[in-house]
Image 1 (spheres, rainbow, N blue to C red):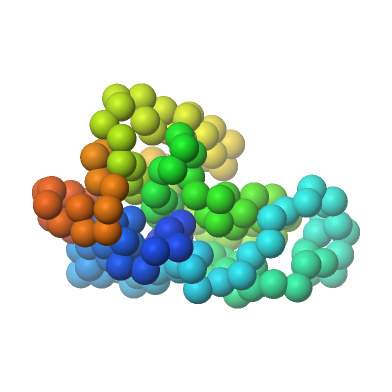
Image 2: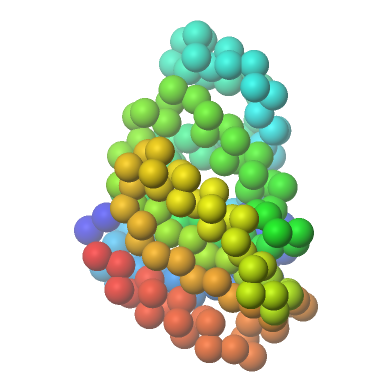
Length: 179
């Protein structure tokens, strides 16, 4: 049994990304411990690139926000799932702030071995997720992580639109298939 942490980058509780992450979590929880971290529940400031975390005790950031709570959850994770709405060809700003704050030596204490990606976008463009997929591949390569897969859902805009598709069932099956 692995511990899976899902970082949900949507500020809309009950929105399409949130529902997709919950469906994945429900499937994965059959064989794994799953925790959802929603950016809507945490206040995380953007990284300012000062690198003071490299020299501070316990690699602590000087910023006083909720990122410390997220670090504690990630340290024990075996797998990380990134779930984000795509507003303008990128992940949400709130999720980007969390990911940028992983630029710390503390990440060397993480036991994450696998990474998966769940994306939701309103547009139908075939290249809608291309920029994020490139970043995802770079992270896999840099950290030598196993690609656990990705689920890319196009054409869902308004809250609940995802329920009119097969995406929630597919996300459940994706989660249930995680080894």
